[in-house]
Length: 312
Image (cartoon, rainbow, N blue to C red; front, side, top):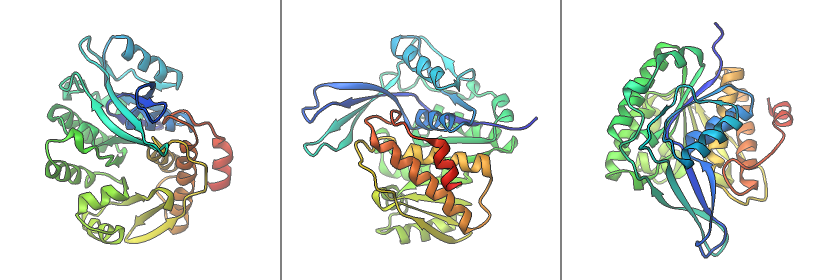
């Protein structure tokens, strides 16, 4: 059996994005990093499986319908009538820039548990992706650990996005130590520049990358917003500038970048040299930048086929 597809494990969210700087009216949009990556990889043409716990109310129905529209397989997700989908409120400042304001979770203990994880899906897929959003709850963390065991046993490539939201954690130190312990288990790690500083407790990207070298991550990608991104493979660092676009909303840009990376590894394999990993960076930068051109993390439309031809 030829292994195909990416598994995304996490929590679905509804992003309530403010429509102006008064922050009194909000537009609900499907979101959450792991949803964004599942959708992003599906749009790029990779079979996508989403593993999460859903409810049975109107919001959960909306989420399931949106995932179905995106051709995402939710057969291995579970439902519980008491589960409420998490919400994220994204506010707008006077300059028009959007920023994370608050995280609402009415049912914090209604998460995927170890018993909900089925090995079968890992035997079908090629890549397993997760983020730190399933690590601050003990039951969800154990389910993630089980998923990692199944992924390794099934020969999956393991991709991890640190994607830190400190408001979810009991303390900064708990967050730091937990995230570090999990990123050491991954083949592919994506981390934002500010997260790199936080985790390594350093004051520059260079110092942070140097400290992370001891953790022996095969493929490390550091995103730096408008400055572009860099990658580290076998101790060698390469960089790629960000394309110039008229950014409207940066929400979800990192997830689009991650989706593009997963596509590259899924379709082209592990990069063998610096020139290949630069191509991966360039493609991911283009997809990430395009995601900023519309409000919402899943709303931007662009020509994937043309980007693939140009950069891969």
